[in-house]
Image (cartoon, rainbow, N blue to C red; front, side):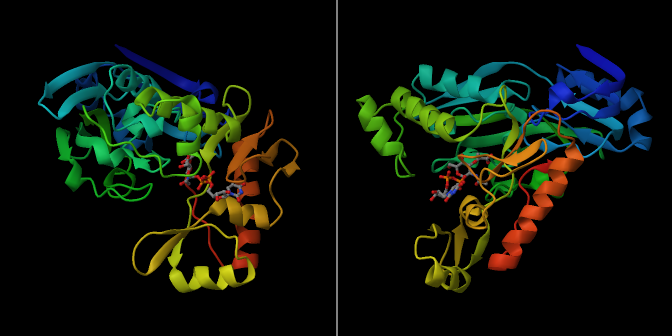
Length: 338
Ligand code: EPU
């Protein structure tokens, strides 16, 4: 199925809930629909285009004078299985958390710590979604899609996707060029649980047995207690990435603030918590007009109602400037600003 609109509102297509219009909006449910459109319609060539999944990691700063392409391909299909693993191909338009629930219900491990992350499956590899010690790249086997430049369907094996912390090839070299249509995941029949992050283990034990259902429940509890529900308060999860810095930089900060959270990345680098840095500059819970920093998680910016994308963006600039002045650390946005 194809849907095509002109002068289309994106308000219901971004979890910040900001008003922005695009010149054209193209939605499709079959990979073949996309191919037909690209081969037969040349409109997209002259216009800037933007690939939109669930809109949970995007901030529209203004109207978009171009074509928005929205892959909405459904389906979860078993590809194959062996004694240890089971492979599923999932359409880009499936809701990520529905897939996680499906895996947990059928006792397949590998994505349970990624419960309740908003967005669609097609966007998961782009920013290599991660939480509570798991990253989606660990269970991706293959990413399938369509290359707008070569006008060809293409597939990338996981080792060709250049996955890194909140990063991939699709976010850089292939940005707005490669449209993901489905992802093949490799799940574990006998998973090793990952309980090391934060309060996960403690929460699971409170719930009883250590199993996939209880891990999912624990993660949902932790997320819900810190992160605002997009249906109640517009937001896009973490607005900034956690900065990766040289160990010496973190040591300097630790001299003044021994409680600063630091996570080892490799021998010479560590990750700092952007939420902590923002909290220390006094922004946590602050509000200016319709925009604010969430009171329970300083890494999350919220729209209290009718904020514009520009207001949210300008507010975020003020925050990163204050963090830079206080700590000399330049925060990098995690959210895609359009
Ligand atoms: N912290 C503060 N103040 C705050 C927020 C956090 O001091 O206001 C401290 C916490 O006490 C903790 C540390 O910072 O010591 C890390 O906090 P948290 O566990 O809440 O996670 P995060 O680093 O802020 C990252 C991801 C989240 C993911 C969580 C859990 C990024 C950019 N964000 O947040 O992902 O859910 O870890 O794994 O890496 C997202 O990407 O949208 C997202 C929500």
